[in-house]
Length: 217
Image: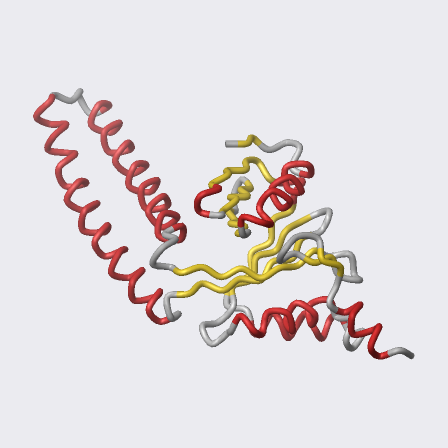
C-alpha cells in the first residue's frame, strides 16, 4: 500500500479555498469568526427574545380587548412594563453574550459537514485551534481507521453543540452575505451555516438546489 498516496486521499479533493470533498462523499470545512466583529449569535438571541416578548404582549392586549376594550391610556399602561422589561433583558443579554464570548476567547469555532441530504453544524470547544481543523476534518471522514462509528463518537464528545438540518425539511433560507451566514430553518429548528467569501457561493448554491420547498429571503 502506498501510504503517501493514501495520506493525500485522506485530505480530500479541494472544491473551493476551504471546502474539500472527502472519500466518504461528504463536503467538510472549518470556519472561525471573531465574536466581537460578527454579532450573528447575539442577533439570534435577540430575535428569539423579541418573538417571545411580542407573543406575550400581543396575548395580553387581546385579553384586554376581550375583557371590555382598550383605550390609549390602557394601551400605554400595558405596553410600558413590557418596554421596561425588554430593555432590562436587552442589557442582560449583552452582558451574558460578552461573558460567554470572553470564555470562548472571543472566537467561535465550527466544523461543517454537508451531504446531498443534510448539513451539520458542530461547535468546537474554546481550546480548539485552527491548526487542528484539517486533522479533525480528516478524522470525521473516518478513513484513517475505517471505523465511522468510533470516529463519530469522538467528534460528538469534542463538539459542544451539534445542529443537523435535513434539506427536505427546510422551510426557509435566509442569506446574509456580509455576515458570511446562511440561515437554514426548519419548522421547529433553526441552523446557521457559515462560509468564507471564497466558499460562500458554492455552499449557498448547494443548499438552495436541494431545499426546493424553502422560501429564500
